Length: 404
Image 1 (tube, rainbow, N blue to C red):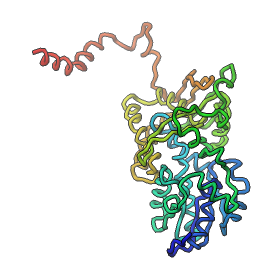
Image 2 (image 1 turned 180 degrees about the vertical axis):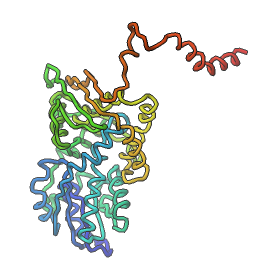
Image 3 (image 1 turned 45 degrees about the vertical axis):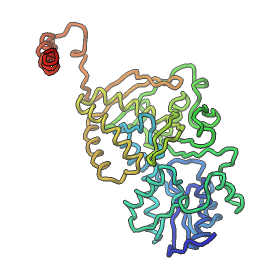
Image 4 (image 1 turned 90 degrees about the vertical axis):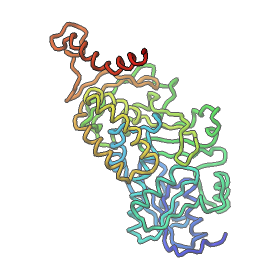
């Protein structure tokens, strides 16, 4: 291969140890003839991090960092998404989308620490992650050169990448027989590629790691109570937990009951439709509980307007615009709405289904005296006549004009 012929002296690679980044370390040295520093950001990948520093150095990195960002991921990225009820295309809990900005932020800090003049990511030219990483880098380290090998090298497919690794004796975690592209963190696991690329194929049950199938879930329901303070989950079944503990415990409870699987064909930012299968058990439960709590603690007009903004918030995260003035402005609105979202929601989990069982709020706007169908001394039914006449006046005038 010919050298790229530029003045790059040191590159920090966003490193995961997966197929793409494993060969990228070698490829950078082979083509840029510069120092390579690997940086992996821990957002809950678990066992994937085992031996990663050693592997990075074997593959050509002069240094290798593993940065623990799990709690920051939850507090500064996941919690804002929960408070906003941000759900891309009404299905996707943004597990990958929310992890990219915190990963980029930590990598940017290493670029500055190392005095590197370039940063590199392993996202393909077809996906959303290239946009998410690069927009974050432009916001955080605008002077750094961005290297995206998938837009430069001759490798055209995952099979080509596997062949490249084999020829150079690089250990990679996938084979041609198991070609799934997967992203795992505390919030979710995603699966793409392989048999999933044909949308007539049902997913393979053996693929899943966090959730039981509906058939194998317990035959008796599990009840779980989630307590929130100003829109932030703080306890499960009256047990106060740290952010990491809460997500891990809820993933286990919900996953055992077959909660949190999503199979969707989504609209990527780059213009194509792609199929993704996701596991996000804790996310599914927390979103459901949070929405129920908002239903009794938020006034109608604010709630309805917030539902409109939730769609936009999800788009911002999905499109890689986390470090944008609009997201910051929306957070200011969302945080204002969450001041009174304090209380508990009890949910019944049963074979993939989530059913509200009880709701209590410190600042509940629900009044049994008003809502009752029984006799009450608060609501005067006669008042409804004048209200309906005024509310329906435009409709009546239009009908009269139309009938003429």
